[in-house]
Image (cartoon, rainbow, N blue to C red; front, top):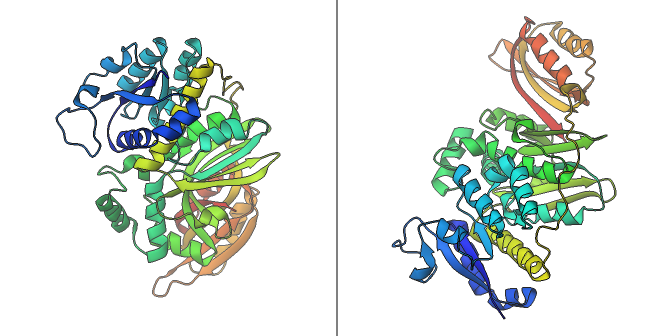
Length: 428
């Protein structure tokens, strides 16, 4: 049996995991695809560096074109990261008839439609399961498992770093700066954590999930993004007291072919399954018109969980190669993108207000909500001993985003409202 030859771009944590699985599971892989799968060449930055996996020196290269332009290589697996150069390598590989497996969420969020169009043009596959939620097979589930259903909502914890931080804040009462520092020391957060804590990483993943789930080309700029850096111990405490947990959620919704996508700290009812997803774990909740509610949970990162998704994609590509059907999958994004306006985006909201502690204040505040037709589910006034101000907690019924913005603008000029301390979406 002629082996299928693979070129591996990158040998970091995930690339090392790919080598371990491919070499350690040869019998299983060969039984699935009908021939051995061989890692023929590996792109590294330094061929002389010592590594935790054994690879023959003649298989290592520091030149990516040694892999891209090698006619013997059937499939390129990209785990090197980056955008501009990586895009160039992938497009060239596709033009040369090589299918591609990638874990690159940044690249697929920004240039996915162009790359997938190039793949169809040259009858190649591009699979990218590992770009979202590590070892959770969520992309394949959306593409295949929900192919006969209409997805109305995808809601998920898709960034382990922020979930770890919020979990520690909730369980230990720690402050955001202290937990972030600990996460950096443990390797869960980068030295520059901006992409994670400001929601950018989650936004890229939600771009991919929304594109697949709603069959429309969603762009990164279509995602409304807010990170967790402003979440305080006080917010967490009030949430728990009211029966909620604070999670950074990606939320993509569709109603009557109008869609909205956001990433934001959200108060989730403690009875909702996603509220109990803690630490670095990820979870994606999918609502289908036919199937109802489903949830997918697991490791969102790490060497072997992510590598497992990559090798699963590799198996799928090789099966298509054997059948001669690479590049025959239909377009995932065949619908026109229609975004909701702020008037059409609706949810419950939590507001924490610092107000003057005197008679008539509550009436003036509730009148502002009434002016913009925002009805209230609950109002709670908290005494603040030693402070001339009081704190008022408001949870609204479903209200549109534009109305809430007008309420907040009105509070800016209302003398009895001294500060809007927190505003969160409420789910579950």
